[in-house]
Amino acid sequence: MEVKNFAIVGVGGFVAPRHLKAIKETGNRLLSAYDRCDSVGVLDSYFPQAAFFTEQELWDRHNTLLKSRGISIDYLSVCTPNYLHDAHTRYGLRLGADVICEKPVVLNPWNVDALQRVEQETGHNAYTILQLRLHPSVVALRKKVQEGPKDKVYDVDLTYITSRGNWYYSSWKGDVHKSGGIATNIGVHFYDMLCWIFGPVKRNIVHVMSHDRVAGFLELQQARVRYFLSINVEHIPTEIAEKGQRTYRTIFVDGASFEFSAGFTELHTLSYEKILQGEGFRIDEARTCIEIVHDIRNAQPVGLVGDYHPMAKYPQTQHPFGW
Image (tube, rainbow, N blue to C red; front, side):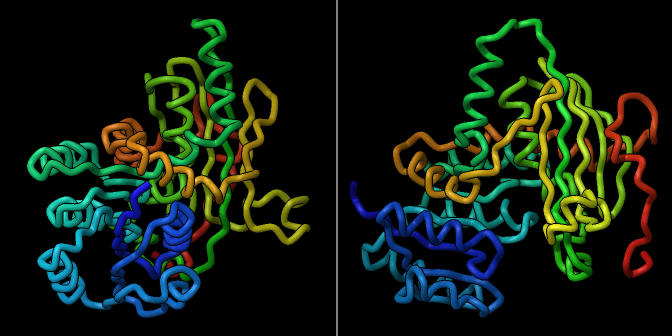
């Protein structure tokens, strides 16, 4: 397969190493990288020869200069904060590249429509990372549901606690206008996975929502989903916390544990392989999960009524900065 030229924006971010690894492992090369932060020594492990910039204007000038010399940038990888995904995807398309954007591809459903118009204008494609759709266990569960009774409705409990320190609230992730809030920042790929397996949304109810958690109920075509998402370490079950673990992720389907932890970090490379083969997930495929998190973000929580996740009863905590 022909070697492709990549650029990356947000190379200093948390998820960028997975993209760098995917570019390397698929046999391609990184020509240029940009991040406002200069803590990007990770480049030495993958592409030490890549040009790096801390100012977007200079990065853009370099990319344009490459293009004028007949050196095309075939793909732009977008690993920036959530609220910048839209703008940087537009930049890549207008640069003449296809774009691989981290989730969530945008924060609002109408932004998907606008990006599709830019795709049409430029003749280039934008893809998003929906890596859980590629996990063997997820694929197997979807196959089981599709081959099972069409009128069967499954009971699903999703719990995801990924502890974050006080730094979180000083970063863009703690700003709902930039991250989209807890549901968007840590839950969007789970909502996508569940809809991919069990079908479209019929009802979306939020029970509890605050700075450190969100709990609610999703009625899907073939599932009743109770979910609890949190960044509060105090929500980690005691037996897990005693082992020193700060993350807890479980999904139960009809009372049986659904395990998909193994192989989680290798899915970005597989996502890149699919994209390079023309089989990647286009941005319209993320529309449903973007609609879900948008609706959650703008919902009025109903409180502890109806069918709520047991952990929704945890007492509310004060914002660490008193906000």
